[in-house]
Structure formats: C-alpha cells, structure tokens
Length: 215
Ligand code: AMP
Image (cartoon, rainbow, N blue to C red; front, side, top):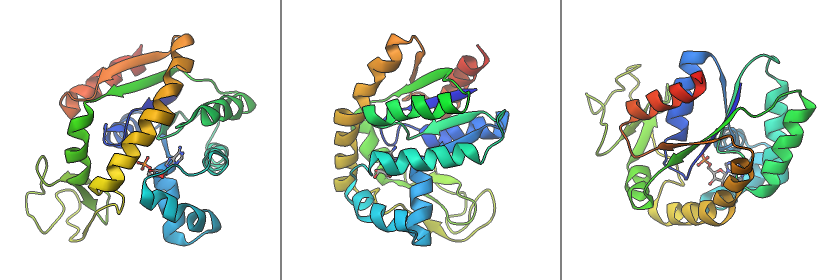
C-alpha cells in the first residue's frame, strides 16, 4: 500500500504517519526528517537545504525527489509507504508518479488532513520533542508528566525545530497554500482523495485514517 498524507505544516501528518508505522509496519517517508538528518550530518544535500529550510521555503524538487527514490529503493518491494510531506509541488507529484511506476507501485490513497489555519500557528510554535526517542509534546496541549523527563523513555533532553517559530511558520503556510494545495485536484481527478477532519482529537483522526486504510 502507498499512501500520501497531505496537509499544511502542523496538521498532524507526522503523528499519524508514526501510528501507521506502529500498527501496520509501513515505512514513513518524511522528506522533512530526511532533510533534517542531512543538515545534521553536514552532507552536500544538507548544506544546500539548511538556509532554505530555516526560511521556511521549499527545497528543490530534484533534491527531494532523488531522496524519495533512494529511500524507496532501500525498502523491500512489499513494504507499504507513507509519504509524509512529499509531494509538495506539481513537479514533485509528477516525479512521484514516475518513481512509483518504475518500481511497480501505485498510489492507493491521498489522505488530506483538513485543518483550520489559524490553529496551526499555535500548534506548531508550541511543539517540542524528546531528543532521545522523538516523542512529541506541546507547551499547552501535551506536557510531559514530569517537566524534566520524557514520559516514554525517561530522556532528559528536549528539542524544538528551528523552523517552528512564528515568522517561518507563516512562510511555510504560504508555501503550502500557493504550491502544495494546487496538487490536490490532480489526485481528485483520479478519485483517490479522502478528506479527514484534522482538527478532531488525534485518536479520532487515527480511527478515521484506519478506516480508510482498511477499505
Ligand atoms: P516538514 O518537516 O515536512 O515540515 O519540512 C520541513 C522543511 O523541509 C520544509 O519547510 C521545507 O523547507 C523542507 N521540505 C520538506 N519536504 C519537502 C518537499 N517535499 N519539498 C520541498 N521542501 C521540503
């Protein structure tokens, strides 16, 4: 199964993708995570992407499509893929069609997480995660039980993404509106878009997505 999770930053794509990984053993292909790892490792891709990401703009289509192709090649042919944060432009959507066809894969669902943009800035600027296991938290909505240690692994260090500040978030939302939202009609024409209310409780969103995956 191959699924795209589509929605603006902060819509909950990463959280829902992780849940699908845990439940179905699918693989999460998050271009944002892969780019952050490249930045951290100081690879040539990371060096090129760093400043663009800090501004909240989009990294080049060629770079992200190449890393998606490589990632798919590292997976077994039967492993399901969840595309999280890719494609983000019409050129990437076209590249993905080609990448999948070359690997005898096809898209099953495009799940759009529908959210209210005003709520996103608060959601994103308050989020942080455990530096050890990656568990996500939020200043207002989900604080660790003990403020100094992670509920899941006991880790004592937390981190915030450098691009989760208000100014960058506004740019990221504008990028979504102008470059990513226009790819929806491509998939609507194929009849594979399923819309989910991303403002619902996270567990309810998971249940709705489970229903789609099982259908
Ligand atoms: P994300 O973690 O998905 O919010 O992505 C963080 C940042 O990485 C974005 O703001 C972009 O700068 C870059 N990025 C991630 N995925 C893509 C993509 N598919 N196309 C272009 N840039 C991307």
